[in-house]
Image 1: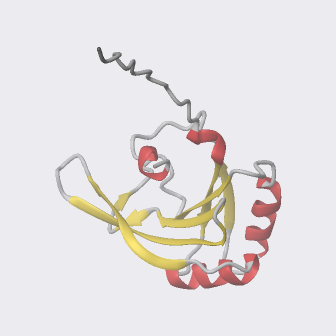
Image 2: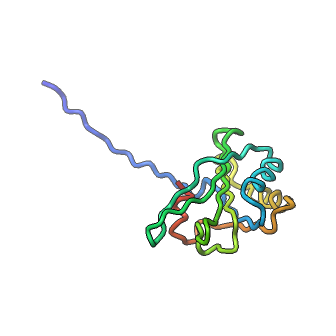
Image 3: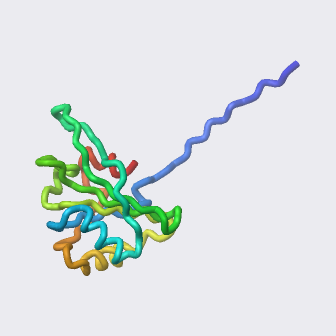
Length: 146
């Protein structure tokens, strides 16, 4: 007689919000020039990858440029997203922000001030804002947290 195997279900609790930092950047520079400046400052290699594509309320598809680097270590990922696609915005509540800079660092979560200060030192960056993902509500925020 065969014994019946029991299936045990485990639920993994993953809190993605604690794993990354979101910063809003105001800059008149095109995305490729800003990515080059960030590369120099942080000694990383942001590269243009497939754009972030979403469908807006009217059903039209919007594409937001995206630059990414994960070469430093597998635990640290840098992403630079454009906040504008034509006259539309990725994060509609942040119309004054041109770019979203995302830093995923599982090991060191407490260096937001260092990153903000370094971004402000870049000549083409006019302003840097910390985006608190726990209090900020926008339906398109889910595309940045995937």
